Length: 505
Ligand code: SF4
Image (tube, rainbow, N blue to C red; front, side, top):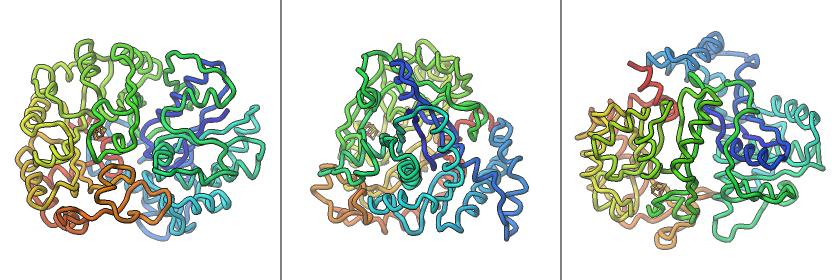
């Protein structure tokens, strides 16, 4: 079997999902090959000759090797300006090398002028004409090579982001055309969300032989005709080639759970899709992370859980950890304790991503976030005093918010700006399968049978255009807030933020 991680996703770290599946297959003695077509595809496009007709592209091409070297060197994160130039120059090369094909591929996204990843018929068209895809020069050769190297019967794609969908289908179409006897199967986060849509029916029959929702280890092993033996499926990164990611050292992505232990926030797809929470016992999760960090020589561990559980945080704070690490947390009271924050720091915690969402307690309560603003303030202060960076996530335009409550968020953010290192500002989308969509939903948000969001009539009239205008004209212009926004690592955002905290000073 071959497991493929398709382009385009941020090329800063290896894919966690396929490494987990690979580990499970290995434990069951099932031969498998792992292909990170994302990093390989991006590097292949970056290295191909390009006709540059403008000064920016010529400069970018001239410096591409140096820029790549910089992003893989801790010193590349000392100067935000040089870092920005390196990222934007490399991105420019990708954009320029794909635009003639009617596509805008970047380091973090993939947009086709004609085809939408939200429409099944467009995905099928991508499969019908794989040559249209700017990565085809790379993947046709690579797939030919890898398929003929071994005796493979099944090819699985890990499809997690919309930016991967059109490339996944182009690759699947190529495989079905050239190797019709091979089975093509799909799994991953995006596929899970599709399959959790109300009234889901597979529109890809004939091209895709099977699709799996949720953690796929057990499903995959049964699909391949084996009996799943309950046991520990640790990720295995060994079969990936040497570290070629855009980062100074190997970043180990590791998940201590799937789903979310809180599972109550009413706007969140985790709640809307009813995904089950499955944690690894905290002590074992920590041991596994240590073992993998040692094996891979990781210089940073990225805990990719939706939210690290209090039990795991207590475990890592108590036992310590051998590598710098970061991850997403909920604002629970444990984190407000300065002693606990210092213990986390001693365990190697570099940065916590914190879902604050709103500076209005009423909004937080209505969203069932289960957090208290006062506690959040204590958390921000405790983290600052311990020397742990914070990446604060805000969400505007939710159903209980109006202009006055959005302004409260602005005041809150500005007031505590000195305790916030980075900000992520998003506008609310209504998940199509949420309970709230039944109350407020109107028509599909985007035109497409695969859209995960629905348009909705805001109960307080706080429509997206008004939210956007508030963000542009008020929020982003606040001097304290804009100075935080300026620190955001361009394109790579939170994936590169820890390096600025580690190497930036
Ligand atoms: S804590 Fe995060 S992942 Fe969990 S339900 Fe709330 S928003 Fe979703």
